Amino acid sequence: MGGAMIRAAVARIGMLREGGDDDGSVLLLTLGYAMLALAVILVCVDATSLYLAQKDLDAIADAAALAGADGFHLRVDETGPHAELTSAGVRAATSALLGEAAPGVRLVSAESPDGAASRVTVASTWHPPVLTVFVPQGWELGATATSRTAFR
Image 1 (cartoon, helix red, strand yellow):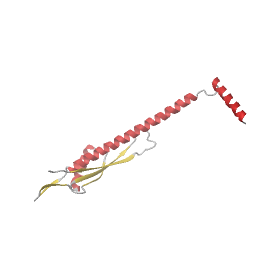
Image 2 (cartoon, rainbow, N blue to C red):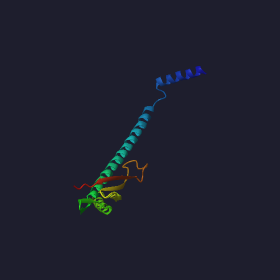
Image 3 (tube, rainbow, N blue to C red):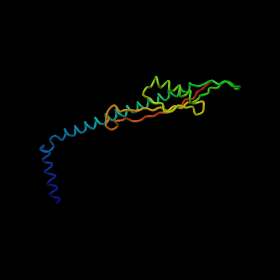
Image 4 (cartoon, one colour):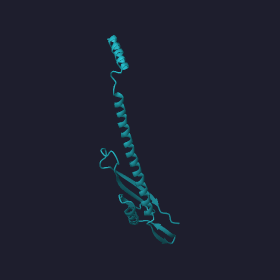
């Protein structure tokens, strides 16, 4: 049995030296690697687009929270003036900003949990620029930001 395997291996080496059996295999490997490289590039394009969309949504949430923190009411008592935030004031300031600056972004919540900070949560849908076969409806993205009002 061992001798037959050795003879088969020697015969195979002889065929390879003569160029008999591997014609076209380099072309198939090249096509395979080209398809793999193209798939990797397209996935990287989608991943980059998703990352940039999330960063944009984070920036919009930060701007909305800052606008909400500017919606304070000034209250004066015996200790002096105090800036006081209400959830209604935060919601009004945030809605005005999102309506003008970010038309595709939805306001999920806008509130003032302690009267001195505004917390805003926004959401958006990301659609991939290529390879929509895997994610045809897109993905829901969300971002939450908090901003404190400071009055001195």
